[in-house]
Length: 249
Image (cartoon, rainbow, N blue to C red; front, top):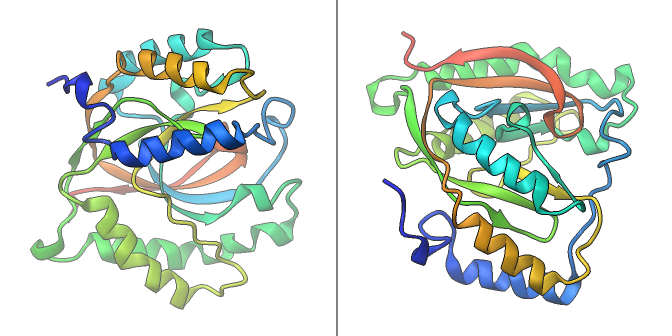
């Protein structure tokens, strides 16, 4: 069911928090991305536990409609094509710290068996903590100073449970000078970044929100988690190193 636009951005994001975010943008302006557009083809190396790369196919049409709007919204923004969309569960190695990667940057690859074991053991737990295919609810676009995102609801709690349960084990098993665990705020997929700052932030916010309210994305099913490498910024390129199928015995 399409949510009530009068509630925007709830229930996907807190209305008061969005107001505080807008005030910060009005005072400090928007933040230009350091990798786009000139470095988007630069080699990097990152590693992530992710899902929905790209978003579920049932959401493809709605997302592509949004992409068209974002692409023509302003020449100063970079909009993520559908194929680039992804939901990061955990960052294991931050690509921004590993540009022009060397073998030394890829030491984490040695620990892939440990990562696979930790995640697989968590997914294989008994019925009290079972991971089956689950539904996500992808809301309206939300604007921040450095990006726009689609906030996502996971009513049955698989993503937060997975984060909570495996982060301590990863830190215990893998040396801290190798692992760079980053836990995203909430659950989201990024859809836009800035190439240049808007000359009129207030008008940009107003126009963006008016457009965003028309683009609720919808519900989709997640049936796998992914271990991914990242070889170009923001998952423009990389590899699916392992598929964790949900619901397998």
